[in-house]
Image (cartoon, rainbow, N blue to C red):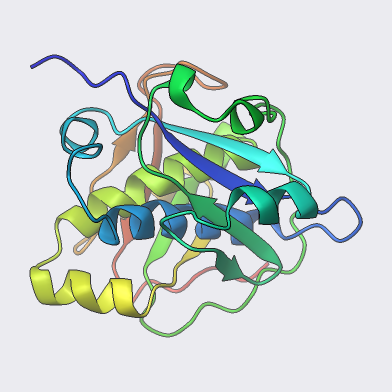
Length: 217
């Protein structure tokens, strides 16, 4: 099967004066990715993308352009702590609105900060801390992991998540990452193609079993 040449844009709101916590932004981007898919009104722009690599591009915008660009985003605006994110349907780079295409994609790095408390029962996205991924890269990998997890849910579970969407993200050392990723209840393990930041074949993220608590900083 020929791979899709489309990419899903995900936009992060980045306020330089009052930045969100890194893991809150990562989680918000992941939830936005899933909601854009869950709330789709047609499979036309999604079918090939979901069957392929479901490639994403995470971009950043200041508060004003973020509000303008995301007013009609299919995901709506996802808010976790101070973080805000929105996601769109998959599209070709050349078909993206020029203003969205012009936003910076690389170098997005938010501070560790004080992440919002995880809500009971929310999926926990675990990331490999040793890879030292930027916020933008981690957000894309978390989105991949959460969508892979969502696609394995039954219809009732998927509907329940879409009706009450939330997630938390945590970065753990590589040894703990490997231990948790092979544990019962872990979602699909995401292995990166290595196009940006990290080496090909690097295991980056997965959704952990519900009973695994997010580590406290």
